[in-house]
Amino acid sequence: MSGSERLLITGGMVVDPQTGTADRKDLLIEHGRIAGIGAPGTLNGADAARHDGRDRLVVPGLINAHTHGHANLVKGVAEAWTLEASLTNGPWLAGTRDPETMYLSTLLGAVDMLSKGCTACYDLVYEFPHPTKQGFMAVARAYADAGMRAVLAPMVADKSLFQSIPGLVEALPQDLGETVRRFDLASGERIIAAVESIATAQGEMPDGITLAIAPTIPHHCSDRFLRDCTDIADRHALPIHMHIAESRLQAVVARKIYGRSAVQHLAELGMLRPRFTAAHGVWLDDDDLDLLAAHGCSVAHIPASNYRLGSGVAHVRPMLARGINVGLATDGANSSDSLSMLQAMRLASFSARIFAGPREDWLTSREIVRLATLGGAKILGLEGCGWLDQGAHADLVLLDLGHVDFIPDTHPVNQIVTCADSAGVADVMVGGTFKVRDQKLVSVDMNNLRERVRESIARLAAATSSARALAERLEPHVVAFAQSMSSEQLPFERRIQPRLR
Image (cartoon, rainbow, N blue to C red; front, side, top):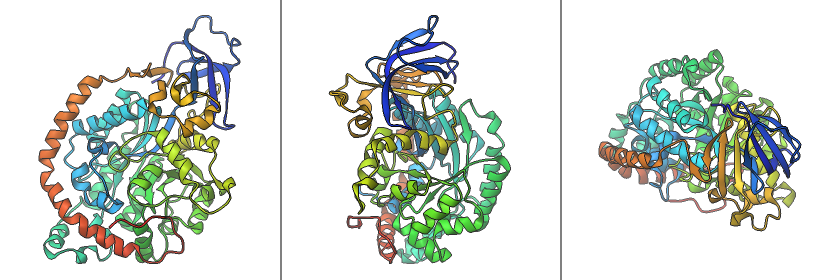
């Protein structure tokens, strides 16, 4: 993944995520890393290729702390979906995928992210009825072919949506209840065996691709299944990534099943640790945050998806105040559509302002940039990413200061958060190699990709038509039940608009 040539980027406005400042500097890149950084004209780049950065704002590559590559072929299918509606549609959204389809879907997402300045992601990969080594190798190959770094985690559970929520099956019309009772995931033992086989393949992954494990949602997993996942994580030194308290219903269900919050239950099971990431974390209370902080856990903040699904707004300031590492993410294209980290940054900034309290509690532009770079790098375990200094990976985004978003360039760091969108992304570099240059993707043939996607969508539509028809019948009943159950009392609130019916 590392570039072999020496390259001198001259005179760019270089952003420091730690201080939130941007200063004119030269960057010397060797063997995929930053070999030197200094005032313009001070570095010895006599034998290096040169790239004029005088009209560029140089930012560390943005890092997407939570997405789902399997969802990229269903971009734009949802409108007024809650999370539970999305989960009901899961069988046709992500089912019937052979390794080549998984490769294509992942490659499409990688192209989307790279073109918008994202150089690394944490992908929770779903494969039905259980993950396979062949499927995972296809996903890994897609990211490697596009030129992105990625952490890949099999997203697994041993309970269906209908088995996981008390009373849901009984609330369905009789024929639908009988149908969903026949839903059968692969046995927990078979899924664990599949995850084990993937975990043992770490050494076969392409350069820049690593593995993790993602038991999807606590109450979708039996305690035995969660313990087995933890055992695999311990034996293979894998990070753990889970959807935690994403919707109000999840917070209510956890208290019904466990008699306490999901975070408290996971702590009792011994799952919380420094390499544990809680995705979403909308419905976390102070005790939950204290536990996450005490165990050194991270949170993936995903405002676009939370808004899109009406799940509520995660309160980030109390997380940061406790020293919890927070990264920023887009989620998958089925619940966020646009895999834009720049959009996620703007939404994170705005959503921090809806909570009661002084404006000093709002997230600053410097903090937002840090969430999208250093915070995500820590979640992915990328020690050499998220910052720009000697020794760091040369994962860079060069934003065009001549683009209207930066005219006038009164405060470039603020403008990354408040103004910039993907149209201003001029160049993207991963490991010292350009993946996007002059706004053109150079690592993937887009014309060929578009036609392949069209053909794949046609095949999937035919293969999933019956599953989609069933989901359309189930959806209103599931949403109505979730609406009723989630109205139960919680000691805090994270939604300011009426819940969707």
